[in-house]
Length: 250
Length: 193
Image (cartoon, rainbow over all chains, first blue to last red; front, top):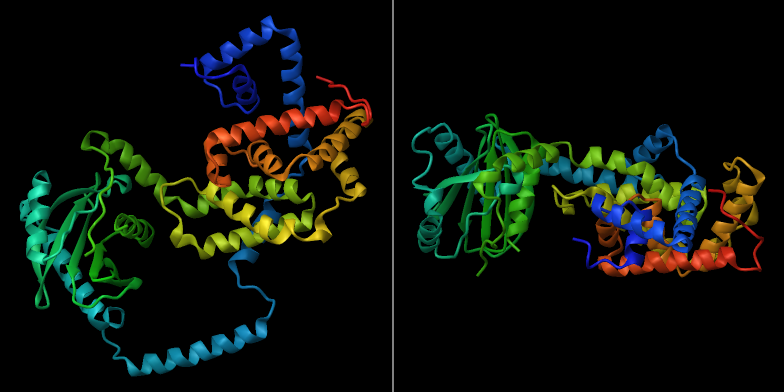
């Protein structure tokens, strides 16, 4: 469909290779019938070629160097940075000594919640027949039921763009509260779980990671909601899935 | 009370497509960054016309992108986002810096070195001189497509303007360039193609 496009648009887009084959044909026909316009088209596209050709091409090594420089902290003002890093190091040591070594990654209330998510995932992931109580086909019912039990509206996030689809969900205890577990599966049969609970404390904590027993847990708190994503996938896709979920909160 | 936001999901019937998307997510950030670097550098150079400034811009841009990596939405093309960061840096650091405002003639000579014939050399110098005379928003739009190699949609995203605005800026840039090149005050240049 090209009716909407003016000749001027066709000319510009022709130079920038933005035309469909049909539009290209239309432009060619027009230019054949209008020699003056053809001359103008030639001259405009020659301009672009000239500009393009006169910009230097950096070597791959040079770009790799720039990237490496960017990945490493700047040297400028390094003294305050060194002092700061020493201070952070000292605080780190102090913290490290003050916290019990066991389950370092799962500390605090949120950590306990994440631990429960990990345990729930480990328990239900291998269930072939009954990984969930309510299947995804009854999504509405699932969401209503879990929202009622949690005391706050919850919707199972949609992870289609990451390749995961909802299998279903179940109700689980989380401390003295109820929590909702959603389980997802991708085409390879990888399963991931999301545990969500509505806590009394209204605060936010950014993503934390903990890897144990072959599963990676990513947990965070957003206002009163606590979330914990568990799965046996590498950090890269898990990280992205967690961000997708986090993005759907907004 | 907070709740999970609603979003569009892919129906199960196109789960193969979503699987492909998932695969492309895996080789996402680093690979896309690497692929975007040459065009990004060329864009930086075309805006500043200076190798050192282009280096600085690209390095700052990558640094910022790595720092903000978590804010980048996976599955989306990285290049428009990087271009946007680079443009912001350029606008902040560069445009208001009077030191950079004037482009020395020998820089134009350097540009022209790549040209094969004296005639082309003259033409190249002429076009960069003409580029200096068009409004920066038009220049940024044109170079975003021609040098950064972004599609119209991606360029519109990088420049944070509607696609229609982008297209009219490009059209205006081209016609101004042509007027400049054709004007009697500049040496007579004729297209060789």
